[in-house]
Length: 525
Image 1 (cartoon, rainbow, N blue to C red):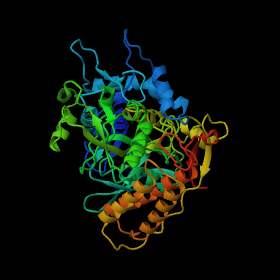
Image 2 (tube, helix red, strand yellow):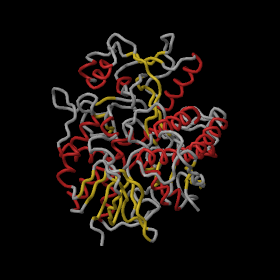
Image 3 (cartoon, rainbow, N blue to C red):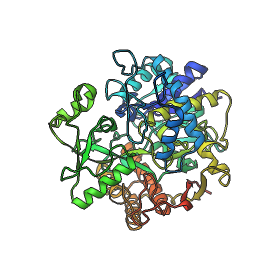
Image 4 (cartoon, rainbow, N blue to C red):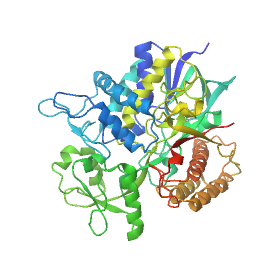
């Protein structure tokens, strides 16, 4: 019998929410493995807030409006049932978080302050300390996990999933000394985040190398929607990496996008894919590497956006007087390991939630501030299913496209994963090779793509794989192997989808097609 009921890989909002619920609500023995420290995850970088309809007598908003906005942003590829779960259960999970001690901003009468962001028809974004929502959510969850987890391992690199007779039974990881360990459990929840480090310019921390998705693919789990990589349009154009994020809430409060002639060129509150495309095309047309965000007319900037104000001060900028240089940056992996509505993957014993997963919520493009909500909803849902004895996937959510592709609301089309990379022997240092992987993905598989750029990128990744040692267990090399593995999957899916939709734009196929109103399922035969 396994020593643990559940091991959670990752310490973002989905993993921590799941760990807390497993221990506190179901008395499960839980282990948590995280690559860095509990408080060093992508969650803490979330500035804008969490989208949820809490209601109120004078609130014109509704969960139906939130659902409609999410479906619109997803460009036809969202699973309706998954989105309904998100918007209906989200307010309950926000209330749970508040009960744990999370503090969201209120006005002088005690009502929650709410912002509006791109793609939202109403102001429904709750925020904490102005623009430090992710940090506040993480703070509350970290305290709760320290109080409840049976086993907590920080600075641990998850190497691979332990499989036994087709079932996931744990995880293999190494500690800071390079010593390999195994943590066995009756169930494993992947909550390892996304892969923003696939690209040269990103808002994601250095740990976001797609480890969870790559591990799942290696173990035989099905992936979906991996071609849809969302770029945030307003990352500060600066040498700092990850790029400081200029929250979408700035535009929600009236900040304007301007080109090199100081003219507006796009509606600021369009979804992120629309704004990022408009920016890239304007930058190409005007032969520049950045544009401008004009926040000079926003009142009380330092009070409303203290985190952004401090980050701007560090680079010598003042939002009240300066135009802010911006350029799109890789921000969110919309696809990932396919799950049903309970978080079950195609592998028994393996569950997934948050950015690592393809639950059907985001479709072709994530609606702003739905990411924290997704983690808060689907992490606990997986735990509830495990506690109820769930085992294996059901034909719900994005999993319909795997189990019942002809009957699914979003049809599924099978796509063979790329053949295993041909690893070779090292002739350069890992940092340089990582930069070359990122450069290739940015140049050929970023905001704008076409057949030629994708083919070139695929060839570069294959060539670089030959310079990666196959047996070296140094985490720096493991990360590069994961980046190349996932990069090749993104390129293959993007090359196969011959249309433009959501966060996937093909210059050689600029329109969307009803023939591609489907989810590509990447799975071994």
